[in-house]
Amino acid sequence: MENTYLSGIADYEDQEATFNGWVYNTRSVGKIWFLILRDGTGMTQCVVTRDNTTDDIFNLEKTLTQESSVSVTGVVKKEPRSVGGHEMLVKNIVVHQVAEKYPITPKEHGTSFLMDHRHLWIRSKKQHAILKIRHQVVKACRNFLDNNGFILIDAPIFTANACEGTSNLFAVDYFERSAYLTQSGQLYSEATAASFGKVYCFGPTFRAEKSKTRRHLTEFWMVEPEMAYYNLDDNMNLAEQFVEYIVQSCLKYCQPELKTLERDISKLENIKVPFPRITYDEAAKTLEDQGSDFAYGSDFGGTDETIISDQYDKPVMVHHWPAEVKAFYMKRDAENDNLALGLDMLAPEGYGEIIGGGQREDDLATLESRIKEHDLDMKDFGWYLDLRKYGSVPHSGFGLGIERTVAWITGIKHIRETIPFPRTIYRLDP
Image: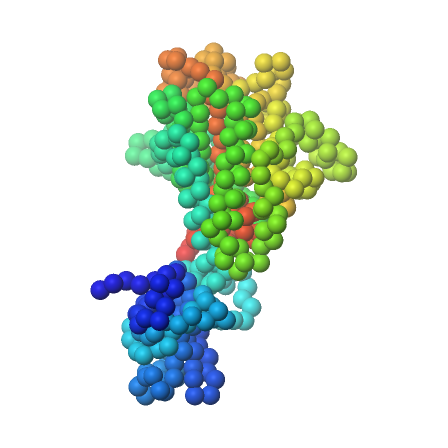
């Protein structure tokens, strides 16, 4: 039996076909009623009349509820006014299950209610569009890196060491010792970059931050390229090319979804390299000029990031940071040891940091000193230090957060809608 999908309904124009799916809604006009069928790839209007069907089929209007599962057979006709540009003149409907009363109705629902019913909410038109764009973002990440000579080498989820500091780790029992859920695959990517030259890892990462902002999750996904023989400038060049490719791919392949979300695509069409680049000191001066109470030498908060990014209509890269606010592995500026060769990319429209990265310290003695300064256990980093003993080279990398990138591209307000089942400090289910 051939499986047919509504995304390809145009291929069956003037032919009889069967589509499997779910009832999105129904409505009647006199002696005709309409069934909007969705199958996950698209929607179409199914026209049911007494002339083309039996009484049993015609009377299903009184039975079918939202999200009932059905197989609809009929003749496909071109109809520009219909959703999808085609409609079906129904001959038969096979009912697989009549759904119980659907809890998510057209009326307004509170966020807590919708998140409690996230397993059903993802069927709605807007949520469906967001998650299709997420798919395209992930696909674009993979395509860009795969087509530019990168090798996917996944990093472990269980780790014995901290990458981004010890204060926000999820600790777990690991047989006779402690382990942590990974904050980043970066350290392992540095090892594989010494084997393959250009690599990336992609997977979930975890931060035990008690943050309730619209930009934070406790579990989120990152794609993390790492490149041997790349300095900070090389890293920034790659980062802006990467983000341009992701955005332009979404514009090319996700027009229906962006339209559903009422996204102003003119703002996305402008995302072309080069991106503006400013130093941390220049960013701090902007905050001072804008009347912020920002304290020089600290990391940027959400409000600070918004003020800085509001000065630009493209993502802005902030580089050369105070070393104290960056991780132990960040290389220092050769001309100013107080500055780290880090970079943050801030998305426009107030979406904050979407990329964090920089050039890594490649000198063994310096790295050992940094580990001691950060009060980290040297034995946990024995293998990492080996990378500086056997063919150490200048190298750089960054991590791009999938959820923040999706939030920016879709224009939605809260990051929790960018992942099928979000994890926050208050939510562990569904």
